[in-house]
Image 1: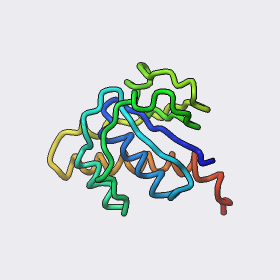
Image 2: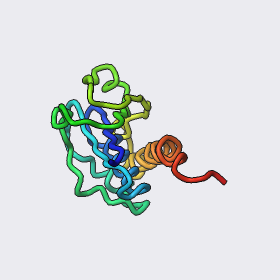
Image 3: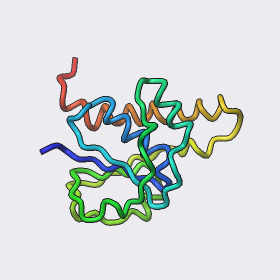
Length: 142
């Protein structure tokens, strides 16, 4: 049985969407990966653009409400924003729940390029955590 991971944030528009796409991109089909939000607002186009730059296409992902996962067993729930951590629903079917705190790139101000730079920065931080937490145990370290 595959390990299943649910990434949660408030809007399910950027951080959790990028985390879902990154784990799927790095691990292929070794994990069953989902994302959701407590107040979904739609997939942010800058998240799609930042992910496309590294060869990960998340354009077909959709923003989902966390209630879609009620009663579904998952191996891990990962909250990726502080607001959702405070209001995170209880997942009795989760093997573990962990919190990773990342800035919200959707809150960035400035030009398109300045906003995209923030999405890239957060994407790279999330990628680092995914490599450390999910992938480092799978492959021998050099």
